[in-house]
Length: 212
Length: 149
Image (tube, rainbow over all chains, first blue to last red; front, top):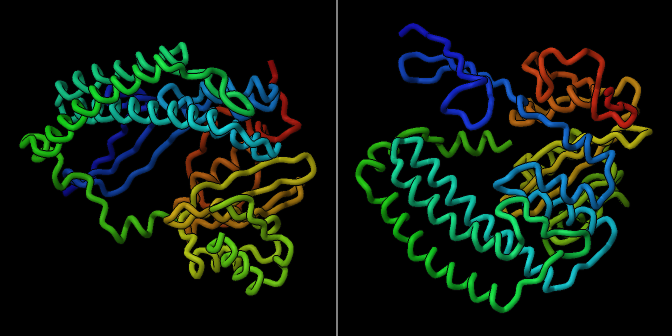
C-alpha cells in the first residue's frame, strides 16, 4: 500500500498539549514516526537559578498541576540530602499521605481520560466526580485543590488534626467501594475489551531493547 | 546495604582508577564521582554485567569551571548507579551513547540545545526543547547566560 505522511499537531483536539508528530502510514500501520516536542518549555530550571531555595519550593510545585506535590517533594528531598537535614517522622508521614492522595486523584483523572479517548464518557464523568472527594479532602488539609504548598525545607508546613484524619478515612472508604466498581467495569465491559484488545501492543523483546 | 556494597566492590575490582570514587549515598543510590577516564567501558560493564540496563536520564550541569554530565542508570529493583563525567567548558565534546541506548537521544538533544555541548555520533534531528527560531549560539542553561529583557 502507498505510504502517506500525516502531520498531527502542534494544535490538535486529541492532544492535551501542543506536540508535533509526523506519522508515516501504510494503511493503518505506522511505518515511521518523528516527533517535535518542547512547545511548552517554560525555562523553569533556569528560573530556579535566580531564586532562593524557599522560592524554589513553590516554583517547582508549579511545574505540573496534577503531580505538583511530587515535584516539590523531589526538590525538597534533594536540598535536604545535600544539607544533611533529617526531617521529623510525622512530617515524613504527612508528606506520604499527601503524595498518596495526589496519586489517587491523578490516577482517577487518567482513567477518566482513557475512557474519554475511546468514547466511554460515562467512565470519565464517574471517575472525575469521585476525584472531587479527594480534592475536597486535600482542600481541607492544605487549603488548595492543587499546588498544595505543603512542603518546606526540613518538613511540612501544616499538621493534620484528628478531625481531618477521621474525614480522610471516611472518604477513603467511599472511594474504595467506587474504585472497585470501576475496576470491574473497565475490565469486564465488552465494548471496552473489544476496543482495547490487541491495540498498541509492545512485545516483550522490544520493551527490553527500548528500556535502554 | 549488601547489594550496594557488592556493586561498589565489583566496580573497584574491575577498574582500579575508581578506587576512591565510588560512593554509596544512601540505600539504592550509588555514585561514581568521576568516570571520565574509562567511561565507555564502565558504562558497558555496569549495563551488561551489573544489570544496570535502564537509562533513566542524562543530566547536564554547568558548575562555572567545567561541565558535568550525570548518567542515571537503574536496575529493575530501583537501585540507581549515577555515573558522572566532566569536560572542560570550552570546546566541550562527548560521545553519544545512542548506539547502545537508543532512548538517550532525547536527553542528548537537550544537552546540545541548552548547554551547547557537541556530541559526536548524534545524527541530525529535531531540536528539543527550544523553538526553531531560537537564535544560534545562545545556550540558556549556561551559568553565564542571562535573560535579556
